[in-house]
Length: 144
Image 1: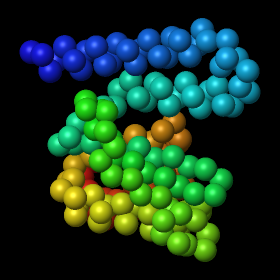
Image 2: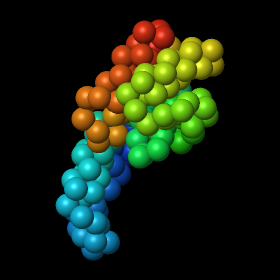
Image 3: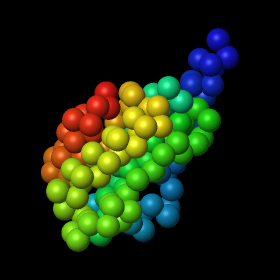
Image 4: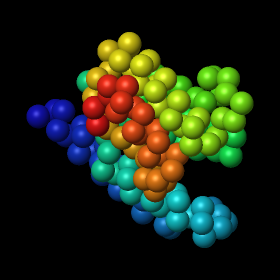
């Protein structure tokens, strides 16, 4: 029963984050594209939560690299993180790099005992780098 209350309070706090985002005057300083991406990201985070047995696999893309973290939201810990910068690739932000990052992340996750994950696409559409990453993680043996 205590576990359910903890999850409910976490979900309600995430809902408060979304309403604070809309009402926050600092957010209005962002351009429309950034505001929309931030809203999508928080909308997804309200629904997706990781545990120690099934962590949240969060992806982030920058112009230079692609990053992934395996997060236990109940304890607030990052269990594992991998980035395309650590793979020493020539081009580290394209679809091929995302696919090789997915394979490496899948292998490291399986080696550390993570078999099932919850996929957090981070507000990005499921296309291109995100799709290549997810497909290669599945090929490596992770279950979504």
